[in-house]
Image (cartoon, rainbow, N blue to C red; front, side, top):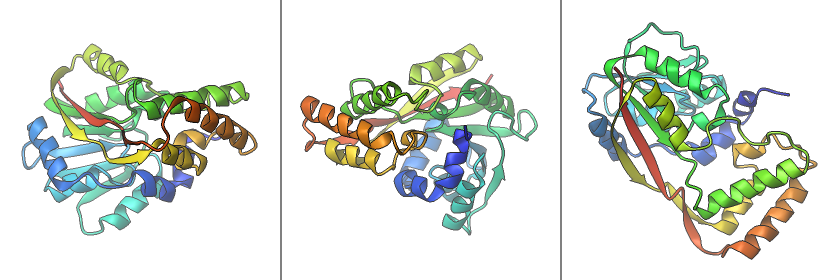
Length: 261
C-alpha cells in the first residue's frame, strides 16, 4: 500500500484549498503571548503543511523552521510567503535533523491523528526544544458529541464493513492521548488557549465535502467502494440529524501549551 503521507504530496493543492487558510495575525499573536514566547524566539513547526501556522508566526517576527515530509506542501508554503524568512526542510517529524535543545518552541498542529508513529514524533520534538521551552499542540478533530464527528465515525464504520482495512489515518484518536503522552515524557502543562471555529457549514455540506474528496481520510478508500458507502452514510445522517442546520467545524480550536523540562 502507498504510504499515506504520499497522499499529501499528491494532493497538496486540495489540502491547501480546504485547510490552508492562515491563522489570523491576531490569533498567532495571542498564541505567542499565551506561550510566553520571547520576540526573538526560534520556532519549529513540525508537519507545517502549506504554512497555516508557520506563515503568521513568521509574519509576527519569529524565526520559523517549517518541517514536513511532503515537499509539494512546502513548495506551496514558499509560494504563499516568498518574502518571509521561513526555512523549509523536507524531513520526518520523528527523525528531526536538528541538534538537541536548539529551538525555543515547537508547534504541532492538526497532525498527530495522521501518524502511527505520533508518539515518536512527540519525543523527537521534545528533544529539540530547550529546557523551559514550549510545545504548542493544536487538536482539530472535534469531540465525540459533535454531530460532524459522529458522521465521520459512521463513515469509518461503513468503510470497514465494506472491507477497507484501517480506512482512516492510524494516529491518535483523542486529544487526551496526546496529553497523557506529553505528561509521561515529563512536560509540564501550562495554560492553553481556545479559538473560535474556523467556519460553519451545514451537515449536508459536510457530507458533500466528504463525497468530493475534500477530507484526507477518504483518500485511502478505493474509488469502487466509496459511492456505495457515501449513499448509506447520507441516508443514516438524514435520519439522525438536521442536515440543513449550520454547525461549527470544529466547535472550537484547542491549543494546549506545555513546558519542556
